[in-house]
Image (cartoon, rainbow, N blue to C red; front, side, top):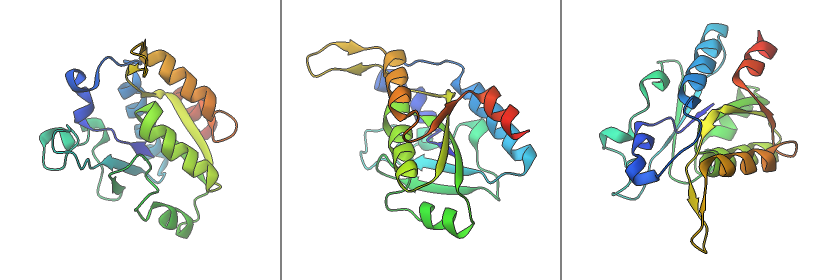
Length: 178
């Protein structure tokens, strides 16, 4: 499952500084592997309801990254909240197809990736989150401090680990499923 791999996240003037500059190449590597294996590929797209957002439908920046452009046989789910399971048929479709295990990557670790991962775990799916195929942005604490993106990323991975998902690297996931 690829979460929100959209060109609008390149706009660092809008989002701010990010971590993990190799996230895209790792996600591409993972996607290529899964396509070669004949695995089910699911793309999630954020359809913002805020016209100023780079992820607002109709804007060029709403598009998927070139490497993550869905192929004809790959499912696409649009969402306008942080979870791919809210107001979509994702859960029903996964259950109808007999899928119990999910491998996820995406943007951003602390928002849509986190929320979708938590919900998937709570719904009983066996989730692996590919840490080096995700990234996030600096966050501003309510007291004004800037929390660096890498710290945000690491804290959210630590919070998800064990209870909601297994955390793994791209190489480990590929090795496990080869």
